[in-house]
Image (cartoon, rainbow, N blue to C red; front, side):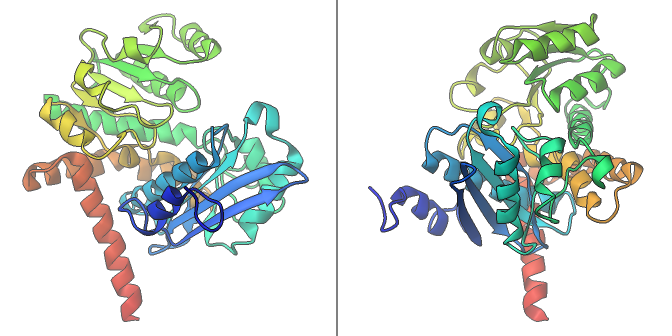
Length: 368
């Protein structure tokens, strides 16, 4: 079933009627000359211009791409609110295989599309896009972050993303075991790409035992070569979540890692990772709680990267950003405390705090 535009009707229903909707603006972008097909979703500008990365991914259908953009943009509103940033939430997805379809002309065309929004949306890197790509996009769009230092940017945001997840793990350990130290803890990481490999370094520096998996053999080999001791690899996420004695599970690849199949067999006591949208559907957070598994909300602990790219807009200072990212430890503990006080899962507690900040901003704007 389609609507008058030919788009799947369920996509428009999601946008206008469901709890996952409520977006301010969704832009469908096409440039036939370069092959660009993209979706830019702006969920909220209550706190300021929407900020979020650009994902380049070979979606099976256009409807899947739109749905992903909507979900990711909504998540960015909550992430930016919880990070204390003066930014709303937005996200863009480019449909295609980045290894095959990414060209300079396509990225320039995409930059023109973002620029046409006049600053309502600020873009950055995400899955399938990198610092070099943002340098190209920035040639057509000044509302671009995540650029290289040579081009006035802050460089790789995955460094502080990993640092923030590490702080979230420390807060989780404090809450569960009464000690923030990760020394001797067994941590499983699914996905050791841009963020995961930095996370491994933090954990090994503190003396944690690390178990990794990744769909790319070269990514696994790089980690094992860099860390010949204290790191082992298993074949696939299905094996990782069943590792005996696992203390912390860190999903660091694509979303939906926590679902009806994985949660019942998960051996870890804590879930704290860098992936966005880890909960496959509403209710998974309760399933985790019912099993006594502490879930550190993904958009809270993985906010280090967005803290960095937001700072880039005002003249980047790494030490200032790292100090802000270190506060993810306190924010995560505050969420666990609120969850206990309200008798709800941490994911719901984080949502309540973020929604209150956005509501206060909207009320303040209306009063002016």
